[in-house]
Image (cartoon, rainbow, N blue to C red):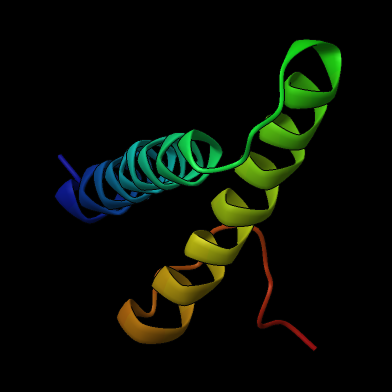
Length: 74
């Protein structure tokens, strides 16, 4: 059985999970200090979460060498 492929997918999913958790925590922390309510709060929170999620994926890719979506490909 080829454990290299299993290890690669495991690291991939753990990286995605870490990015989700960190982005959610940071976006919630930032939104606490922004006095918004209603649909504007939802939109700003969603955009902030998305930006943080992809920024964290990029940083994980740069510093840990995990290839997520080909950010480093030329």
